[in-house]
Length: 190
Image (tube, rainbow, N blue to C red):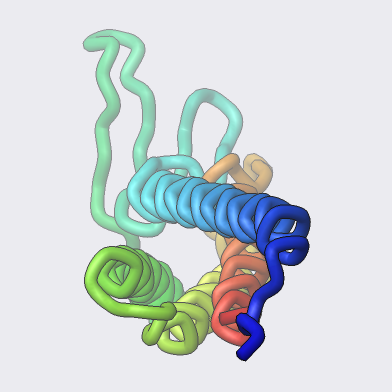
């Protein structure tokens, strides 16, 4: 009776198979590390875009964000902030940005949960779907804000421009979209 593996196969082919397996494992580990870093970057961008005070900047150190209308007081060297008006479109932007934060946090929790507790990435589709919904929410919120910029200019005739928080929201949109696609692709690779 002959053995299933000959001695030539064992001595010459096995080390290359082991190296191939180690290389693919290292590549997958690197890919998971990059995806995790991308996800954390998106979370940071969304937190800053949603909570900081510069969606619209006006001359003279005045800024508007999703929550407050802030002016710089030169006498006291502090910010004086008041609640923004009760616009329906601004409430929609607030809700969409908070929803994007919640969805992004949920997808990160799902990703970490399935990475450390489940076999073969059982929740990559759910994680990818949450990230795709995050990108849609950010896109819709930033688009609504951009469309209603004329209303902001009507209330503040001194001019102004979009602030860095608005730009961060637009940067977070394609990153979340790419992240969602990567998660779905990772599941297909498994």
